[in-house]
Length: 125
Image (cartoon, rainbow, N blue to C red; front, side):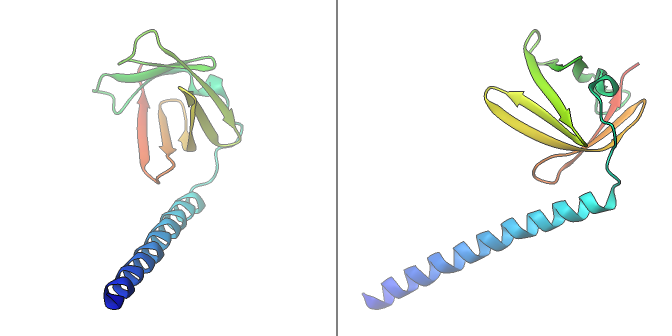
């Protein structure tokens, strides 16, 4: 019985340590990606206005107008957005999601989400 309890405790401690290491590893990768990219200065909602898609040939995913985002999948549903420095904040159903803006120009937008996924979007004309 003591051996069983010992192995269970060892298993719990081992998994907790690995989980904490994984969390730190994700933070380190996120910080490395951020360091490689120069922050976007003067991020303005006016620069984000327009219709955005994954590439020039795909259907639109969403459009931004003033301080709101509209999804193509949920027509008529308005989602509030805001910017601060180089970060885009999306407020949806009581949840705030943040995206680091890595690149923003006349026809492209590159975002980094909270789990270090890079999202590349193109402005539709």
